[in-house]
Image (cartoon, rainbow, N blue to C red; front, side, top):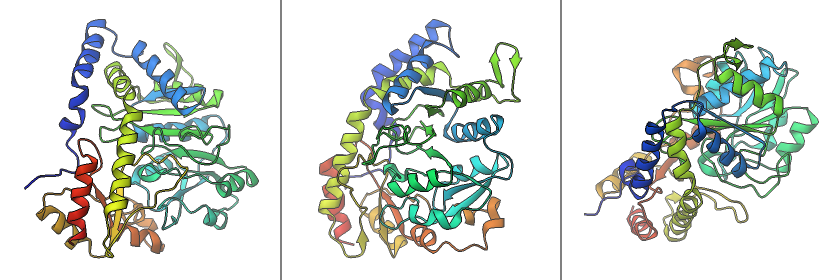
Length: 373
């Protein structure tokens, strides 16, 4: 029986192995392991991709979001106790970044069709303490529309994108500065290059992207012990730097990102075309929008039976995410609140294999297995 693993990182990176080895050796032999040319070049390339003036490479995606919020606090734009609206069904990192800075996460339900933040509900969550909205481009589908922008403008709110899952995705509506590319739509964005991402390092790393000159300067300093120059600490900062080897490896992977995203889109279209089972609800493909399909997520009422069927037929799967932030032990203070759509999604979602080396032929075979459920 043929096996269809959910994600095999060794096989995933195999096509680039010679390039990756050469890039790593170049850094090793250079003697520059931090603050070197590979990081500078990667920052330039990511900035160009996202159509922004600034990219600051950092240690991971969570730190990218934490640094953005902390920088706004150092600049006097945000203050402890201010509220940030964030989708209730996001990965917990989005919420952690808010609470780690003494800010208050305000959970907002998602739409069922996009599984992204429902911009129509933002208004009812706004209070005198609301200062920002954090849209999450979940699974690689841009979370961006006219209502989100209008609400932010009317209430003078920051828009901080969680772009951890959507590098290279494009909205069908322009962002604040005119670009359509996620990571450049709002005031600032946190990006993750965790190994499983479409643009994945071989370890932890991330980046902040923004057009705000002051914010970029504050983030860069905060990520390097709060230092704007050597041994001169203007902030009580952190050690959140991106190292040269990961930057070099990411530059290799970046050259293949467009092909990677196109391949995933083809697999997603194949799934959606071939899955024909009344018990399985496929995600919406939005024409005119550049979804990058970090995950292909279906919804099933009897999830355990469905996953057991997949496993029995050699198909790997995963759940993103079974436990929403308000149900996590660390956020038990939120447990009394009700988020019915979030709870429903958490009980039904199943992620299918979509990362190469899965092919469109594999997707058709997996769809046949699903249709037998």
